[in-house]
Length: 111
Length: 116
Image (cartoon, rainbow over all chains, first blue to last red; front, top):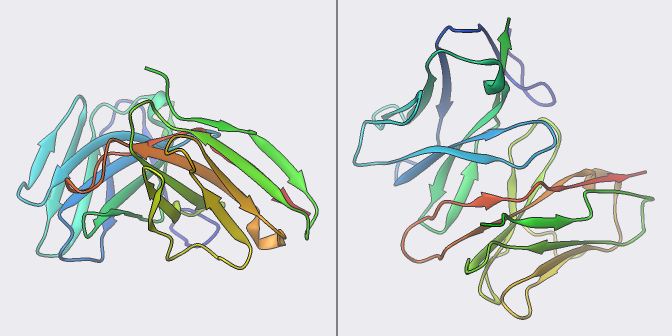
């Protein structure tokens, strides 16, 4: 189940399955979005980005989908691996100046 | 290419003490950011520098937090005096430049602060 505050929403997936992590953003004027991966004890690491003039962007094993109508962003990870276990954050640009980060989702990959 | 460097990695202090964190951004990156990340939350921007000037410090608790980037390269973030609620990871990030639209930020490993 999901909870907020000290307990991050958690997604558990079987190794080899696809993962979908969702994010709702707040500013309809946001022009640029980034997904970050944060492993324990490390800083956030850039995964993939997308600008508002696109609906979809693909990288290596990852795809980001943007639905501006409902202000929703998703990160799809194909063939999830144990090394994908981490906390994932979406970030939206703050009027082109800096970023506002979402609360994060913890991805746990089960063997 | 070397990444963003931060020190110390860990710090434990008592409330009302002072503490300082250091950050060295990626070479050539004009923009530097300090974030506070409380356990279980996303990073929250404290202050943003463009070279040695402050771009945004709207969320910096200025009664106790201060930051500087005197020569437009390294930066220090100070807390004086610390409170229990300052326990968090302090992340430094840098990006190439601001003004061309939001630029991808590269993060350091963070300094984990515990205030007792």
